[in-house]
Length: 479
Image (cartoon, rainbow, N blue to C red; front, top):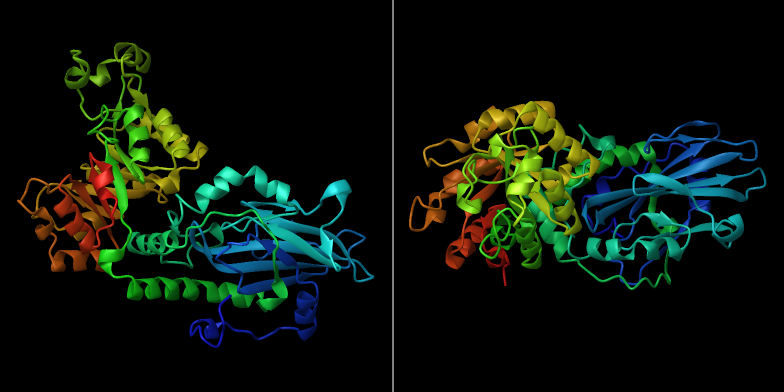
């Protein structure tokens, strides 16, 4: 927990109480939280709301129901600066109190939803009359018993390890329009910081944290403070983590294509094995408008088949390429999700029908935040951004004479992707300090060409670029 005497920004939190009686109630019924013995992050603030009648929650998408046996309810919006996946965490606990001052019900948040906190035979998990909940290691979702958390053990371990920090700056619907710090650079800074905090949970929850130790403020005070807190943290990370230490995104170019057939499921598995964060894949359309993963329009180079991908239906292509079947977009998303990798999509062609399929797949697999849509075609990216503003886009270009900022801003792209690997013996020198400064001032991310020269890769990382592609993704892992 941050100490208000040493954390200069913490002192900006407005601790004014609207009602001292409500403040005392919030402290009196403050829950206890059991944490993993290796948990690195603890709550620092609890924003509270007292309900005497049924009403909508101001901080969670639900209605608080006041039943006849309940006199009042207390909503605790529990704030962490950090979750192992991203910057900031806001979880909730609800305590329901009867006329005798006893807790008669309790609920808590759980991965976007909420559950009643009951254990065996419907009993509340109370200790000394206080609701006691268990916090998922690193992720902080609340459970009434250890058993709930043990069921998620594999996912929790990956969240505290291999996927730590990959979500960057978190912006939930509650804070859309208030938090403006989710930029490619800030996401890299968060990734860098959190990767340094990785740990293996013990699932020993004997570490009890009394929420009463947190600072209690009315919810409105906490809500108003949070955006400035996010800005302060990103500025602090930018100040303390130099460009050459920032964790870049390792993108396997067409999968680990130096070791397996490009754009194949085998190449994706190999990419994960070699430490990739994302795989770069190429999107083309079949004659029946199914999106498939292929770089060439022709089938000749890889399959020795005359004809174009667009000449065949998906079923026909599966038969033609059965020795190493061409992958559908959905097959690729499923594999990447299982392997904890994201997707960098190089859209060679896209139709209205295939776009509908692509976004249906992404939405069903909750993969929008794990995907970047790239293309040499500004019109493709402009259409994507217009229809899905939440999609991250990256504009590719080959000329060194392109104004990257003007090009990206014209289509509201999030990243620029110069393809300069053959433009000079040391292409990283084309990324001048002036070029980098202009791109960063515009809050744009930088993705670099596929690169297999170790010295060149190290030089690019030292410049602080956001991502590098490679046919040999193990070279992207810094020692």
